[in-house]
Image 1 (cartoon, rainbow, N blue to C red):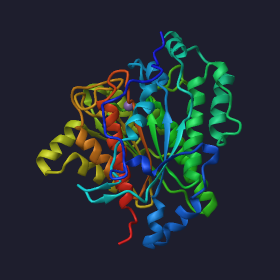
Image 2: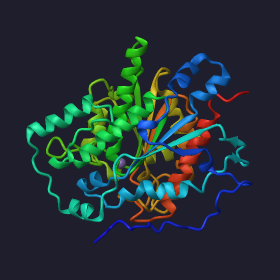
Image 3: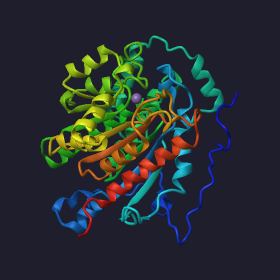
Length: 406
Ligand code: MN
């Protein structure tokens, strides 16, 4: 059975961009990673505080697709997230006015560079085989090779070949890390669209390596990386067989990474009925903070703070020299607003809150990286990809306001 339609039937009718109605596709280009222009001289020298150059510091966003749901399958979730990036891109072409007359935001100076997907999406047959694939106890040497490669590889010229030894997902993770790291080094802020949530560890690791590289170049102390996971789940499950990552494990991997401090980790909109006590205690034992969904609602009632305002307060609570990675699992949005996810819930954030939070993240000068996970068009192919698209547009609108000429 070919699970991947040749021509995915995404398609609520929508007006095409026209000269009198320009949309985001006007500021988007597709570029292969090896041809990505280096804009780091522009974006790093922009720290002068001069508005005109500051404007350029946040101008470049790199879109990266992670079309894999193997990690979701390893974690017992619903298949189909491998189509997330293609559904997202389908709607992206048509959405998002360049000048938003409602908010008065102008994104015409923004530059969105689409680097494509980090791997070819699985064929239907390959995908079918994943379901019956039993994770073998890995041989120690293979595990060692994977870990060594992850620590040293940052070039696309010779990616480690792990597919043949049954490490296809691990290879995809390394490629993703390479894409995100290269984009950051060249002066872009990556926006990664998945695909399963295991993408968040390679993304976080790329950010850590980027900050280390920067500190070496500038001969200064590395800026701390702060990570906020907006998710119904904590995603700190142990690795399978001690070494195989999956959609439930990215933040345990992060919390075990040398150089990352647990006090710089936040779980936001977690749902107590979907998170084990052991895992919550694990997060807290590492110094991480958990903001439960009901607690956020209660603060909204008692203090009049909307959930997006509380999210903004968390971003502001991070150290002033921090770099922030915002990781958004779209299953944190309630099922009627985002049914197309691999693990839906009838309760959660509302669509407008998710959009406003993406805007807040985009408008925050310390945010350098954003990922959006678990978009699963196999379950629902229109409303949820559209929400993801609207969130991306909100992020770009937010970015567009930073360092603007007064
Ligand atoms: Mn998740």
